[in-house]
Amino acid sequence: MSEQIAQLEVEGEDDAYVLDPKAIAAILYAVDIDDSAKLTDLMEPLHAADIADLLEQINAFDRSRLIRLYGREFDGEILSELDESIREEVIGVLTPQVLTQAVRDMDSDDVVDLVEDLEDKQQEAILDALGDSDRAAVQQALGYPEYSAGRLMQREVVMAPEHWTVGEAIDHLRNTPEDALPAQFYHMVLVDPRLHPVGNVTLGKLMRSKRATRLADIKEETFQVIPAMQEESDVAYAFNQYHLISAPVVDDQERLIGVITIDDAMAVLDEEHEEDILRLAGVGEGSLSDRVIETTKQRLPWLAVNLVTAIAASLVIAQFEAAITQIVALAVLMPIVASMGGNAGTQSLTVAVRAIATKDLTGANVWRVIRREVLVGLINGLIFAA
Image 1 (cartoon, rainbow, N blue to C red):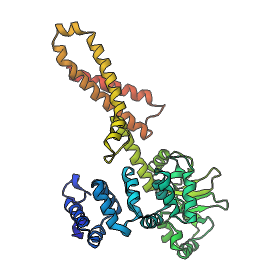
Image 2: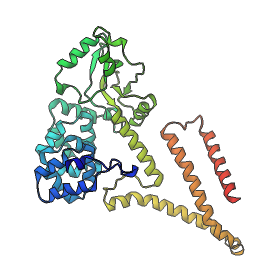
Image 3: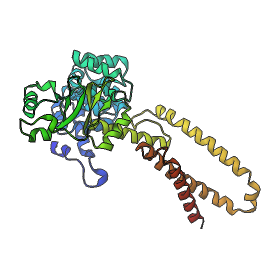
Image 4: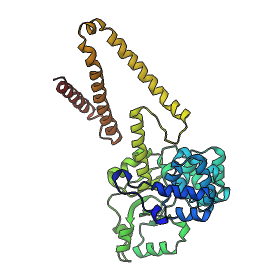
């Protein structure tokens, strides 16, 4: 059965990376019969992201029972993968001992992402589970503005003086305690005596070069430094624009204080794209796990705006009542014109919003883009009118 769960459905594109319903049923059956050993065996092959998806798909009652039965096997990475809408609920179900162990295994940036949206009481519970140095790092990161690079960065950084050789760097990494290094890293950041980052050395070049080679001689050509106060959307754009894997973060005195990795930048890009799509549809921020009343409150203002515009359009049409009475065909054509105009507007709006997000639409080309979209709309209108 474990092998069946580990095997994700790949029969078609729509089913790729979707958990097998039979696997979910087997897990829920283990919960129903209160078999902790069987549940652990079924959950072990699953990635943390798949476990998070599972918790989001089942109802609150089964979710609570599963978490309690899973117990100490609950991993901190699962918390970081959970949707924010149910994260608080899951934290409330976890015992203090399990929560403490889960949080201690997380990187500092994941802990910051976890606690920033929680209530004060739950924030204190998580911060109390951390060691003194980790707690100080998280609290310092929370001091930066929301949606800034300071919030996004992780404090664990692998750095070396720019005058070191490859051999000295490798010896340093081997002699450093494992818990003092990030769980995963891609670059060694070179710094000057004032802790100003001056370059990156990839692990590939580090391992291929001879021990006597100076690190400064094998540093990357592409090197971007991220200010801690920079908007995270700009950070994500820099990663996408310059094909970065990681980038050092500096304070207002340009001293190295952290690093941002590509997984965090891609998460920001995903959030930005999701936000754009939701705004286009006028549904606001939310998820499938939100309560009905919350979703209703988010969507009601936009529906009210649409109602006002629809009434305005009907008042305009009412001014031509006599003409419509004489030429009945106009009444037949009105919904067609309205529908086609709405579709054309949606197409132009989608292109414009996407161009703004990718910074392709700027003050230099805005009027050219507007003229282009107007011409496209007119041409399409003439085609359908003909």
